[in-house]
Length: 341
Ligand SMILES: NC(=O)C1=CN([C@@H]2O[C@H](COP(=O)(O)OP(=O)(O)OC[C@H]3O[C@@H](n4cnc5c(N)ncnc54)[C@H](OP(=O)(O)O)[C@@H]3O)[C@@H](O)[C@H]2O)C=CC1
Ligand SMILES: [Mg+2]
Image (cartoon, rainbow, N blue to C red; front, side, top):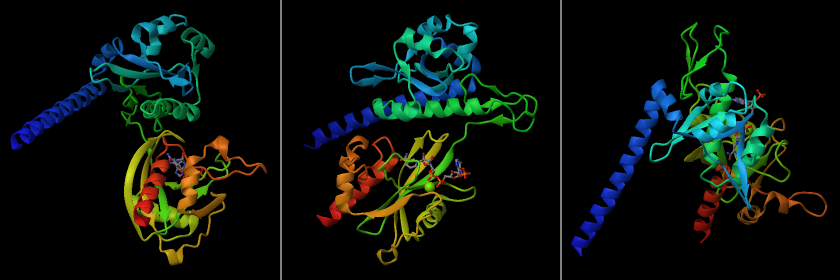
């Protein structure tokens, strides 16, 4: 029996080792492409391309599914030939990853070109990211989110903030340089804390006036400069609902492309049940309240379409699985269920 376990252990270890080395080789290859412009330009000739138009990704509909097509360099040339100065367009692409076989993936925004020509040629449509993220396969949404954030960053950092001179991107799009001042700019993102507050038996969800009707989510807020995650969570909870956090636990993080590339840092926070009276910040929030276990179970079953009642009001529903708020709510539910079992 011991021999069988040892053999199994050896197989698992060797598999893990192979998986690891594939990952390491891939990351090192991507890093090389970021550092070496000529290698990256060469890679553009064998890579695949995701298309955007004014930051909306290109999708194709196949039955009920939405696909995110990857175009080959040849297909890209065929499309770009329809427009003047085709060659310049490939230069604008940014590196967003590569396959395990080291086939690089790029994203390219063709915002200055006539979108109807591209849409009819490729039989699909450029779709707002707020819709696209929720209709594509779950492995495609993080890719669209990070590609759009990078394209957005390039679009809004074309000039040096010190000299006002144009900045130039490197081939991979991992940085921009102002040759007049020598300043190098790197893509930025904003850390945001998202916190599911619990008083031990209920959890606190809130809505902003801009949310779709009926949608409630966990409290969130941008970190201030100089703050750590714990301080940001405590401050946001105090500011938005007037409660004092007793303890907090990190859960997970997620890149979120709205409003312009955020790193969502998700935590669970506990407040004392005896001091759980909400005092809401009415400038930011429209409603904030405690939800019991049953209400959370019911809310998770609802979708935007099924939450409207006969009198025009909306029953609560929560963000879809692509948003990290959903994961926090599920974790809280599991914890409560385990406690009450
Ligand atoms: N993935 C998920 O599950 C969820 C994601 N989120 C995301 O979290 C983000 C932050 O949540 P929110 O509650 O609005 O944040 P805040 O509570 O921090 O309030 C937003 C306000 O903060 C100010 N602000 C400070 N720093 C920034 C910055 N770097 N970028 C933009 N605004 C800033 C702005 O005020 P002013 O304009 O007055 O200067 C803005 O209107 C949202 O963009 C939302 O998309 C939220 C919930 C769930
Ligand atoms: Mg907030």
